[in-house]
Length: 409
Ligand SMILES: *Cc1c(COP(=O)(O)O)cnc(C)c1O
Image (cartoon, rainbow, N blue to C red; front, side, top):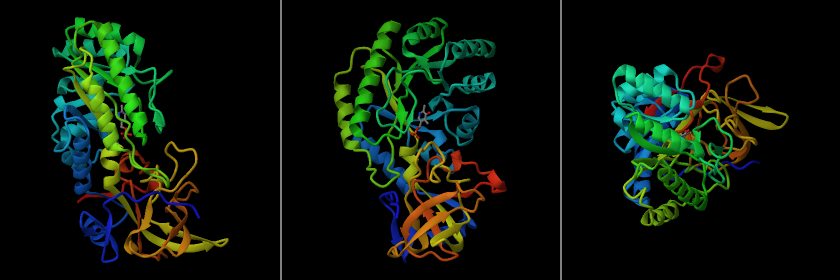
């Protein structure tokens, strides 16, 4: 037996089935026209942002990192909830514009921006979080050609990282951002060129659950921003994107971030801000924390069989929509996500089963040796924590499968 991850709060049974947004999964599947299906809950999205705002100091703006989930109805819904959007490609710029989001609220990070992407961002009025000297010079030349004033920030490669973070994106040699000691000279170059100076972006990591580690890193980010602002010597810093890093519990034993603790610690830091930062616009950027738990992936059981004494529940879904849940997206040891038999959500577990996808590869596993109610052909399986890096980060075209259906309820 291997444990399943914890089912996020707010999912209950209705007539024996899992309910999302107050509706039974069988009804949602009928409405969508079948499985595999991602269902995203407005109620969860709303509640998550409200909790975050309640816990964090009021002046902290909340940005959504679009790469976690870029489906248009989700972007449109998030537009009513957050203060800004962080994108990482020209494709995502097109998506936020199509969703009616004001490009002035958008910042664009990413280590390999093409000239055409830089041009698109400058033309739309989005901020470029520049990741190298070369990028700044290309942006200035492109802006000159367009006759526009570019909005430029510098992404810093800090000398520290977020402890316990799932993906390390700062500290030591990195393709991301500019090493901290080279930032002041580049910032001065941007200001001297007459660009619209947007300040600094310091991203230190992702998927951290330890409030103390997050708070400590936020303190380090503020201290580094102060030091760099003083070295730049242009007075107070206009903006500081402090990064994100708040994670969600995916696996057995994971516990949610103590948001109150993070908020209290940050409030303390903000009470004693140095002169360079007292009037700075501060934001954090979050992807999975905002949308991850709001999404559920539903697939149907198409077969059930036994091999060498083990039970296999075979579904019409799989890693082509759930690369992370299958254990193939940045994990070393595969562990089970929260998974349930959605059509028997209030039934007691009665067997040990392996839940797999329909792909012809041994990598396509949704739950190993899980204690679950007996699932028959036609039952629905739910994979939770599917709102982030599911549809947007899985190889949907693998084996000619194609994308899953999506529904916002
Ligand atoms: C991926 C990424 C994020 C979002 O990470 P989450 O873990 O989804 O919150 C935020 N900022 C940057 C720069 C990123 O690359």
